[in-house]
Length: 446
Image (cartoon, rainbow, N blue to C red; front, side, top):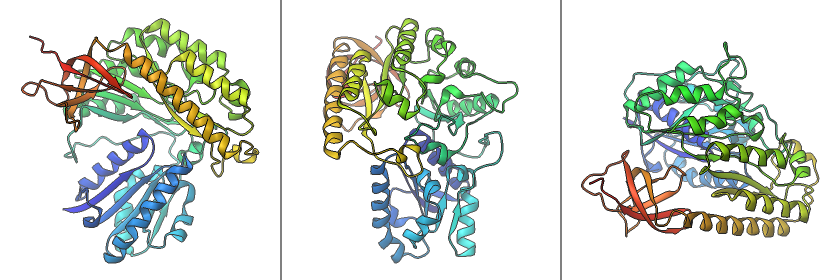
């Protein structure tokens, strides 16, 4: 078989898109390799949400250039959001690049590769899919790989929110939802291939089913439907938008035992004026009310979030408000960034008034606070027994296995070598914690 080297930057949606392209390429005769120098096709799935990600991608392309020069028959492809955003510009920047594919071209990756190979010229495919419905055809073809214990399932693509700092609506288009029957069929197939935990994905999963679906299927109904599928032992979903989170979706945390009590709920800022400039569509009090609602349904629910510091116009007090909100919620973890302008977004029209050194200082204070919150939250698990979904062996020399707790803490643990395997559920006695990881010992059911 021919060989494809694949590398992914960015969110879980990109990871799922890479998995889908791997499956389609496998069906057309490609096998994935970890050595790009041996590859017939190098495919980099890109992200444009942060400036830092772009620099990493451009640096990677620089390292591939000598390989392409040594092997002119190698096909070099860029996919994803940066590909969508830059389009033809990428071919001009990197003349040795063969193919640029936007997110809507994922399903046609094989067709694109064949075109480049046969026509001997570059291809830019960034047109948005004009279909009103979003579909990922389910195939009975052999899989490129068996499912791990956790599997991603795309349920909605695109975003209609148009936050002033975000490029996603311009790179992934408007919201489109997959039909429930197609999602259920994919979940069944993944379970048959070994998946135990299903993670439902979308830029805004809470908007699922609101457009171009007859009859409309609200997100909470989809959750209940997935929970009924035999073999599903855990359900997660990401990402949620606070403005669209319903009481019914919150109630699902109480009703569904296999819907884990952990939620990623991006807040971005803890100040109303900043949230308004970000066009987030909610206030701090509304966000807090949602946290209270979720805790009333699932008292032990754990939260993670996204934070942007140094947004245009952010004052010292507005930044302090963000720290105060982080303390109030007590997030288990956060994805924290200092603001950088993204071309094509409304925020680029605002004066980037916060000096770089101030952004760095605010980001460090945010990181330090989150570390203290994570350390504090970890302590409550010490001396407790938690249920872990085993992912496999760990590289940690003092332990045997690793896995995730329901609250999404990584757990390294010893014991169970004769009985445990990937995808199993294990009771682990937690003895210590470090960072966002717990450490413990397997407790045999006997």
